[in-house]
Image 1 (spheres, rainbow, N blue to C red):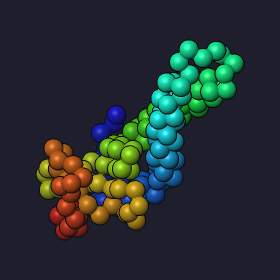
Image 2 (image 1 turned 90 degrees about the horizontal axis):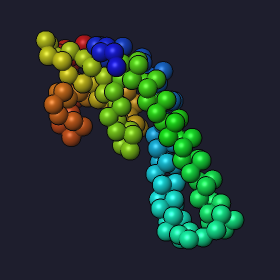
Image 3 (image 1 turned 90 degrees about the vertical axis):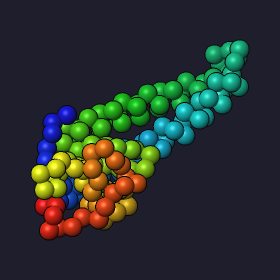
Image 4 (image 1 turned 180 degrees about the vertical axis):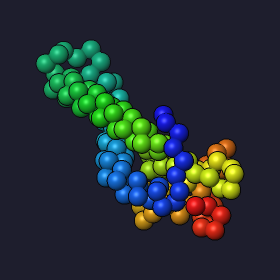
Length: 139
């Protein structure tokens, strides 16, 4: 991944561009998790069943959908990473953007559902330790 350092304004502009793709990735991850759970149940239920068993057929279809979603997610993550943005957590919907706080490298932090980027945290901490952006210090 390319290391891009963003101002708050630049990060918010890029966020507006990548947000729709990221929202689709979060939803794809949720569907992937639902399918994984269903596949686990069907895997147990179909143990020893023949290939024409309706549950075995469903399991094959779920596996195909699972594979397609996994590829979609992998490709989507790569596209966002190439833009210099880190996907920190698809389950929570967290993105980080590198920025400078004085002469210190930090992350601008955004969570799905927030209007724009309004928090930051150091590189060695995470979402729980984020601080509101003071625009006089972080630009």
